[in-house]
Image (cartoon, rainbow, N blue to C red; front, side, top):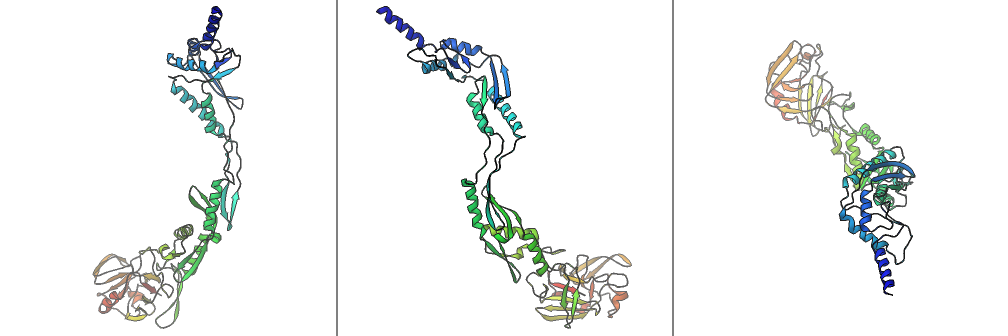
Length: 448
């Protein structure tokens, strides 16, 4: 009896410290071995690994030795306890353990190489296309998702990490999935587009009001990552129409002269304003996106020449207003109006006609004034001149303006034909102070 008990105890002790027959650790059969024998076998085993994806070998490596040390003995003993059964078992069991002092750089290197190969493989594959909401033609539509065949790298690398100590790694193909139409994200996009679909803004250009709406003018809008994206509009064409109708910049206009006649002022000059198309479009778009109800166009105007921000906006009389200077070349006369009332009327001498130095016709503006001033430039017969004047008011970028001309003796109405100025409007000294005081920057100068 004692012998039997001893025999049973010996068998139990043996089995408590040895693996069952069909136990595999990291791909290595350790059946019947105790902890020290198992560790020794693991230490001697060279590391070789083949990685398969869809049964196709995509990467393999081999190195002698392993990373197991005596420090891993407790791990092996724990596995013996886990697999222990009261009666001997032939059940196949497979375990994975990580060496406590595993060469981390090897695992990192293998993972990086595998990732690079998967990225290379994906270059030949088609990405899935997410479903999304879009506002187009005044209606909100849901564009359905389209499947692709690109691999999900994160999922495949996760599979690898779960098998990284096996000699043979089998990866199951996992593909990137598109966002579906019924997803919370797409439904959120739809709600955000619904919010702006009913919006409109009133764009005031001087006395005219133009109504722009999301449905009529924003031809294609999407919403993603917390932001609206306006992909196309017809606003550029609409701003062009407004410029054609309302803007005054470099346009020919009809002008009512001092004597009630109407003359045509041809294209040219630098007076007036127009809408900056890109700036105006951006402001209107932002107003619609932010829910603004009204917008003033003055912030979007521009001019050319000296005052690039534009002149005459909001003024009547084709943007000239009721305070301006009028110069008749044929009559050699200047009239100045303030608030609709004539305040100056004087004979002048304009540019010399016989040499082509005529005062340029067109619609200009007072750029700046200076008193006193030194005028420098050139004229026919005098390549370099410099004269002192008491008053100077320039109205063209080429250097034409109003000034006194104390040196002039010929003030006849035909003096300009052969004895005119170099392009300026010569004004008698005794009236020039009054002329100067009644001219203001940004006010129109009409020369015809």
